[in-house]
Image (cartoon, rainbow, N blue to C red; front, side, top):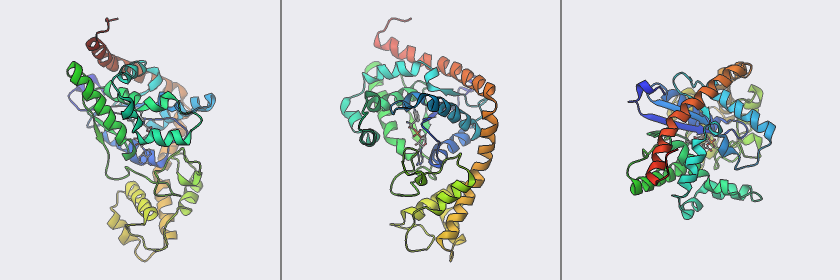
Length: 335
Ligand code: TYM
């Protein structure tokens, strides 16, 4: 996102460094970020502040943040085109989040399905951060005056509340924030669990066979696909009540670029065993180069440090303009 090409539309997106990054994250988000880099002014973040809404073990957390950063670059984000920063390195995010908290209604946050799910899952730690999480996400987006936010379908509700908060603020003080549009790709927007294909694939799922990590070893990936839940029809076709097969066809389509019809024709007369092996192989082929680049990057920590420092510097510069503008409108005295 260079300042000389300011006419291009702005894209911002982020990923949490909570544990491993899944095939769902890759197909639903990261892969699209890579594709959008030339056409838009992109800026991406590792949303580490978001991750502490759930308890993190410090040493693992630190490593996960660095891993997530390296993985974004390994997936093909080019920091010369798209700065990548670590959220906690840019203080404007927490500052604007506090301000926006005061323009967000309790009732609105209570309706967030992710809050309901997570507060059930972590019933011993239903903290205020978990509740106000969408406000921090709104701050992430609004600080950069983002036109579009490429995300998977699960983040749509959070995008809606970000729009609502921006509209409310603009309604009171005049145009301050750009109203962002979600960018949800047609293919890969909702990768489902391999064990319960009515639920989204999620790294927080306790059943490790339900998700595939981008960094899983080839034999692990193959094993997980071979164990994937299907149905008793034994015909590779998209259909109602065939959630498992629909999901596998969706994954196959996303990684090969083939349409569902092409995949159905290719596997006509073949059983689910052959199909699952083929999906596993296609996914392994997709992640192999990413894994190689990831390993190289982790061996070059100085390079990563240089990149995340320059990313944060850039992000602070851009985001401070919006924060200052919003604070001035509210009536704070300029620093
Ligand atoms: P997170 O870290 O859970 O996921 C990162 C991205 O991956 C997408 N995704 C999926 N897409 C398809 N199928 C799936 N099974 C799947 N699981 C995850 C998510 O939709 C997301 O795009 N709150 C965000 C992170 C965030 C953010 C932001 C995003 C913080 N600030 C500002 C956009 C803009 C989150 O928890 O994503």
